[in-house]
Image 1: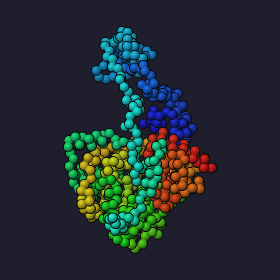
Image 2 (image 1 turned 90 degrees about the vertical axis):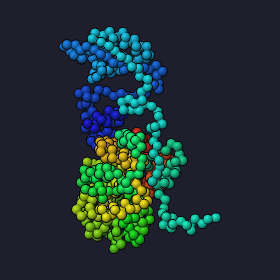
Image 3 (image 1 turned 135 degrees about the horizontal axis):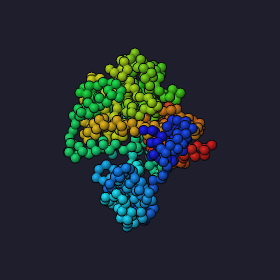
Image 4 (image 1 turned 45 degrees about the vertical axis):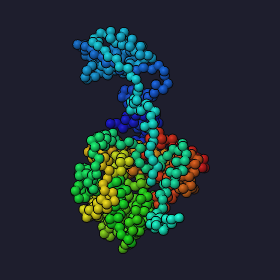
Length: 160
Length: 390
């Protein structure tokens, strides 16, 4: 795997000078490389991993299973585009297995999400069935631990 | 009142307590210390390895292992040394699984060294060699490796240290605390002197997997004429982040290992059983974990070396282990003064180079076995400390 992308995908707050040092490359090269990735759309953006549960009282996420009938001409792509168009929808994945799409949907209340599924998703052309799973707690997200657990303290002893 | 002094063994009493200890005691009394002093991986043991340990515990496999270790583990160790370093050991007769590398070092000294024998120890190096050699009846002869040699052992220095009483040479590379390594040509030069003088080598290769800069660790046992006179020490602590499992091993000529097994048998019986099962899993399926951890250490290494050099504390490029050994002479402080003031004024703990031998004066050991976030904060504080000094 590209070391630069790997580094940025786990932590994008490094300066280009730090990245250059860590990877043993000239800083100009790193800058140019990042610019190229950005212009080619390989790097799509930089986001903070937020522990929303800590700041928002009303924050609900759900995973929605969607079974659909693929369209003759466009297959699953057209359906996916419809799903993506909703602001409520965070992520859209085409799945192998028991259902076709997995959607991550975000809202303020369970009721809001339930209504979104009932009114907007289920009624879409080609949707056969939906299944809604509310997330109760996020323990780990994008490789980061979200719980402030004792587990992750440095427990090493001071010995020799 | 009982006079303990009368009972206590004089050699034991003569051993100095580890110099690292003192700083840990100061650090322990403060609550917001940022430490760069710990000499063990910050990674957890990879899950599949822990899981294997748990699985065998669940199955109740908690009996002693054979004295020299489970045969499957010995086989895997033997395959590993062949695969990684191209040295072949017979799993039945040339391997011994020990309680950490440290036990194997102790056994090797006690098996080889007799009253009056001289043991050559390059310094700065890990704190255990001298006391253990002395307890085995030997006399230590210290070689000071130098900053300008990148702290490698030079053949001339070795030659000058040899007397008719010399029996054994310790080769602690990749080195704790300097991060120095010995490349093939360095080892070849040293090997020539060792063979010429008919000596035994104790090659402590515990940090072998942590070799950087695109280089591969070379075991001195792989050089012509050295296999028959080398006791290799290695283990799982550093390469697989398995320090607390306490598992190491010794590899060497059958006549030596046979005697070491006797000492191990009576003193220890056998290494921890659960740890041995976990170690089999580590050797079978852990190559990827090793690479992943090494890559992560490597990034930290570059960052830390670069930061020290930028701060004006010159630092040769360490190509092994997870330590950097910056020179602090430009501050006008001794190593001990530097470390004491740094911990009191900025609450950052590093270890004075003198804890690893007198020639460590003017240097400090900095461990980069910490997250990058932690390292950045510590380095910032060291930077402030240096500014305030001027």
